[in-house]
Length: 363
Ligand code: ATP
Image (cartoon, rainbow, N blue to C red):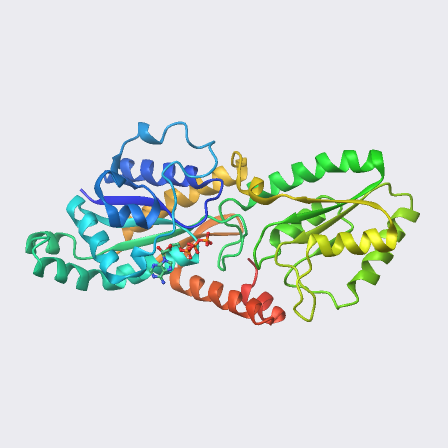
């Protein structure tokens, strides 16, 4: 008779639907009541039709769809205790004491705070007459499990986040398409890829597309990068190469912390090499489209494991996030991963690049 709800929060990514499906079906298989919460924390705060019981069929035919069918949102209300009080009331009214959060470090931080406050929120709800003492007793502990949906692969503690592989597919399809026209016309293409402060997408795309040069946030070049870039592209052309591909991560910068944009790179190439240079900014295409086979199976495994972790949780268990470790879906302490992720972001902001790489570790 346990109630379990799943929701997606923060930026969307391909594979979130596969994760939602796995959570719901594993919950039903284990005899729980499964719920969707639509529009992330906003739906939890607003309640009503946003919190809807799910059945086996309601998650049919979604495994292949990109984005998230239950919607995602950023929610200012949930950052305030008053918003979390409303959310707690809405959950208790449905008997939901198990949550799977599919989101980034912000969403997981919010969930952890909610869990810590849960008993005081329930005390307040009893006092103001919103719930009965019996409801409080029955729903006294909130269990949470996190899954990380992000195309950036910027979360510490997992080898891959849900959506990264699909984003790489979008990037590589675009580079392959552009390479054929670049070859015909001997052009140089400068591709801007996403990733915020994480260079994973840019560096992997660079390797698998045989790019000539990659600018990524964690390894900022010295300020004389234009000389090195020109030299490298000249070498490639004189060795008979008919095209050049340069990848610029959206957070790229030089060692002084000056941003390096696709326009900056184009300007250098225009002025010093006189190549026919073009910029392609992939933008939200990287978040779109169907999830790859890898993301589907990753999300299935993580979703099933998340539900199992919730069912096995006790009132003293530490909340976990489901991670990929090698080829295993494992449970790792949620706040440890969140804190490491936030420490990496801080180090990147403060331009302590080597510290950021060290802190991030294998992921
Ligand atoms: P992305 O990686 O795509 O940015 P995220 O989960 O980190 O995903 P955020 O915008 O940071 O995205 O957080 C999503 C939502 O989680 C916020 O709009 C807010 O409702 C909730 N949230 C984030 N941080 C907190 C917090 N410290 N306290 C309460 N709620 C929070």
